[in-house]
Length: 281
Image (cartoon, rainbow, N blue to C red; front, side, top):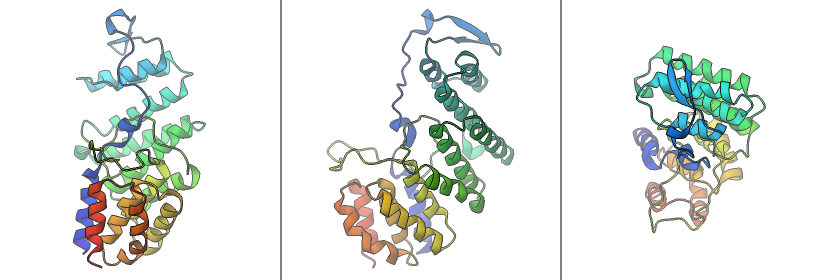
């Protein structure tokens, strides 16, 4: 059963589609043709200057063959739009993530430490902007728990999100690692009755606590908060599925299955997996 629990946790990484970019309200296309924009020479690169901070950030978020040029495109926001704190904060989040390289799976310990230091700088520099802070805390928890396997160091970051920002909704765009906390790609004809489900960071942080908790007390405490405050969410369904995959924790999830499925939040694949795992009990 323990092996099945681990397999189910891994499968949850790919169950649903990437979070933030799909949740962001920011347009991904550029509002003005590059050829008609003034160009600034910055750090050895010719970077078009957009009339708005949002346009400048969207350009910086686009694809670059040279990672150093992308860094310059992000860093120039601080020079051109120093008062646009939300966009500058988002750029700082991107710059912190870039420390992990093209693919975080090939990063080394020094890369992790550089990213951690950069996210702590984000926390210091954007104290007045919880939309930025919640993301920085999220990545710190992820790096410690999933990459460095330092769960005792990582879980407190997730708890901080739960206790400090219980109602902040996901929506600010930033690079997304392929972690478990993603939302389902709804297939046409397979949409739940409540298509607009809640997507709070705190609910997702609670799922990560359940994934990484070392004992029942913390795991069940996180589940109780998740059920009480965020039951109408996909993470609650994933939490139920994970608990069902281990006989040590299954009895905690069983009483909530019928109520959760009645909410019609889970897509048919998650609902089916919950039902199949429950059959064993």
